[in-house]
Length: 443
View 1 (spheres, rainbow, N blue to C red):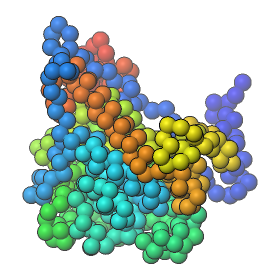
View 2 (cartoon, one colour):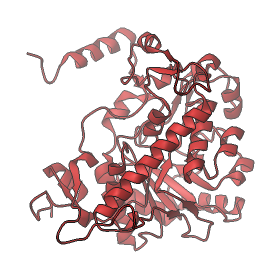
View 3 (cartoon, one colour):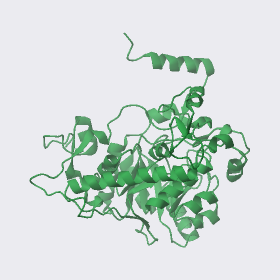
View 4 (cartoon, rainbow, N blue to C red):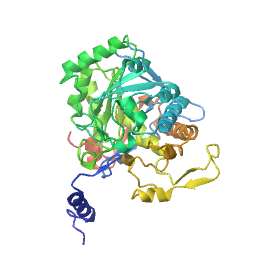
């Protein structure tokens, strides 16, 4: 019988650490089982409430973010955005495809660390420009080209930790944008050099507003830890939008000990963030975006019901783009014909299609998380954009289907009353009743 404490995976991990003398690094998000939106269900219409007819009655998905302090807000057709993933972590083709997809469906995408590429700016109708502790690739010219600015304090996969980009992904172009030597591992700072607290952060936000003539919204992104206090400090510093990234949030590369053992799940994070905004009296004025493990329209709808204004997706967008596929089209224009099988390339990484989290290696078999020209060429930006756009449209259709079933004509009218929990843990974390009862644990 296997030991629960020292199971085969634990023993193998200890052997690896003893043999090589360093910790494990990988990509994507936490693999551990935690309470998720799957543990909630909707109380849809029946005799006591009328559902809306999907073919005749409109359900609104428009989402407006970032007008609290006089900036031109981001006006989205759907409440689903694409999260920041850097050029360097992703290939130029991947960044372009994500930008195209966001434009096709009327939403925004985000630069990530390392700066803005011309291809991404051209492809993206609405582009959020990130400012991270590293300042890599950050410059005033690109700042003024952005439609919003996102100050990244932390992310769900590694709150309190800095970013990693291994040398095999730092080619001449990536190195030039980040002012780094090519081929050398890059470790980003874990905290911004420009401030030590919310008062300094407010000064930084005012500097950014001055540099952009106050025209663009300022987001602040935090990893979900002390959510109540952190959200309130973001509001005090002058944020137009707060982005809260839960434990399930992904990354291109981080220590596994961070990915699996820091932060709190997205489920309680959204409730805590929404409650903090309500307590300050700025709910729906200061926007709330939630990210970390969002996969389906049901996840989106539940996040909205718990108080989010929108969600942001990262790993799911990459999967739609082709991540973990077993093949790619043999020719860019042959989207439905011959495919090139890359199962052997996954095996060479010690992985398999559907089970690969080796984003950090730069040897992505489908050309997404790589800077090697031969591998990057496997991703056609046009095809990738169509796939991601299809996925985003389906998410929006699922959200509206659930919203209509709850008898509501706007996705932003969903509320906690529409939800119950299937487990005690989820009920406590989400602050909704356990199914079949009026009991919310802890109240």
